[in-house]
Image (cartoon, rainbow, N blue to C red; front, side, top):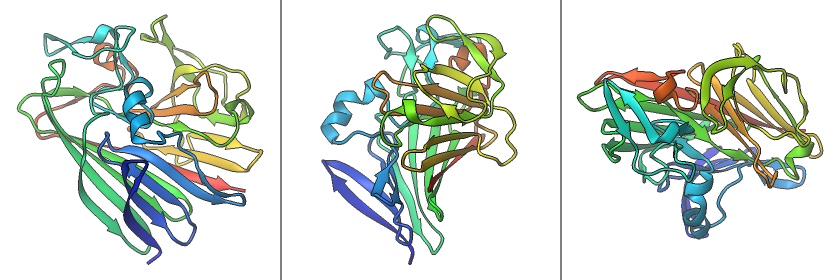
Length: 317
């Protein structure tokens, strides 16, 4: 069978690994820490290459996870919530844990252990499905919901990531979904080409909180070198009709990454860290601070669910 699933321990990290034996592509996932994407590896003329900037050991993960949030599942909110406070259904809520800037950041599932509920290998793909039942874990979000994440490796170095959230409680709840992966294509990001389909970006204040306004975007609408550009911005994607909504390419080694978000992910957050060895490209269902500004916010009634789908593909030339 061309596709297989194995369990592996590397540097004390307990991974589930999806493999395409024909092309040598591989995806590894870390269920015990928020269903993190640990690797997405493709075979190149120079050998295997992992495009995910990950944690190289369990100790590094424990030391850095809540600071960098690399590959974190962003749920039940994305990016920042100003001062960690919001109003919903005529009540005010405040999250317990906050970032040094005073905001709540990147959701509540990053340290949660997901249960593997299904793994399937066939002639055409390998997949693993995991779930976490959130039960009022934080006083700032006293709701019950289930988060299910399915990774599926397909032919031609294609990966789909599908998240399903379901309100398992008795009251309506606010929710948003996203991912926080960092990608590396070799060398520094300054030499990579970036493009994404967006004519508008969200205006931020000095604390990276949306003001509620959309402003014109004219950068990276066509492939161009990142150079010394600094980004910590959120863009509203244009309709992309099946085309890649975003592309990232290192022309030096011929590795290119294509992004195919579903319509449920209309926002694209991009961050260039100071080390410039990788770049965070985050597909989001809402704008940052959506619990306050309502931009893209979803409200689920009891029993309701919502699916969020995202596809990646690696090209090698």
